[in-house]
Image (cartoon, rainbow, N blue to C red; front, top):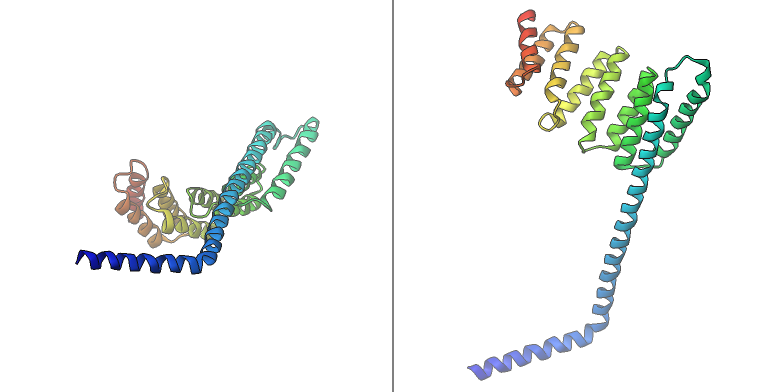
Length: 230
């Protein structure tokens, strides 16, 4: 039996060697393609990482420029005209960068633009920039932050229904992960009150208490508003 087993092994090895010999060219080509694909991936990853680092470095430069100019953004002093012109140049440079940037770098750039527009009380442009930041930072921790700020700019413009919908968008996707989710839920109730929707406000406040009963601030405030409304 052992002899037969050895013959079977020998037969199998012969067949394997024969297969390898007949198909060695194709296998070499396949191996070459695999190695080429790995090499391309490595190069792509390195290039992507380098590009991302450069993009983030550029955003840091924008932030430094903003910090140096921030005190002049709302200045009414005629002597600050040149600095205010520099602010407009910064906005234009940011817009050019945003048009070609992606991902986290783009999200941060849009957020910076939104901050400048907010300083200028240009709430419509600030809203647009925050929504663009949310889109660029989609499915990251940055998205609910940007949406929260977008909703705040909607409130500044008196677009309360749009603000409620944006706050609800945060709650639908990030109620378990966004640290300010309880605050967002309270904002929904508050805005429903402002719009005269008592039942919707009560529903929002009760939802807050049900999901975040131990929240030391917003749950207590929700209890207070329920007592007033009922």
